[in-house]
Image (cartoon, rainbow, N blue to C red; front, side, top):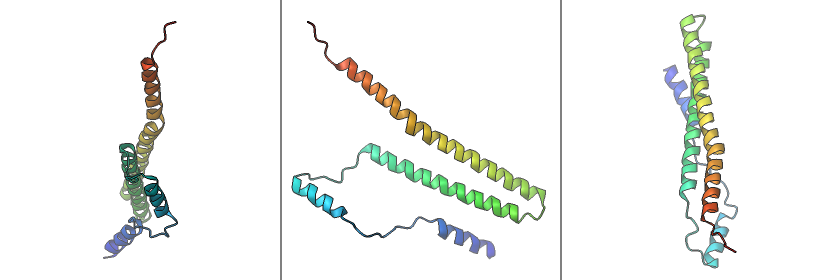
Length: 135
């Protein structure tokens, strides 16, 4: 019973809940765009959707990392000298840290290297498409 209560308490602490904040003028921008003649002001590009999904996935991975670290810490603290439980807790901590490093590394490559490659390929394609003037 105690384990179920602890699990439910931790689960409720880490569940993302919507935040109801004050609207400080978000509707004003849409009204202004509509008066200026822009009909679809809520268009979202594919890149923005992919970015949103990546942020959502990274948030989920961060939450899993935190839960694993708390579980491993709890397991270690309640081991009471049992080497098997301590080793299991240390293995969970090591695996969680390795997973976090791999995830952050993959995000870093995606966020820093890919835009440079895209910019370079776009620059080379623009250079090849510019017309050459013959004097």
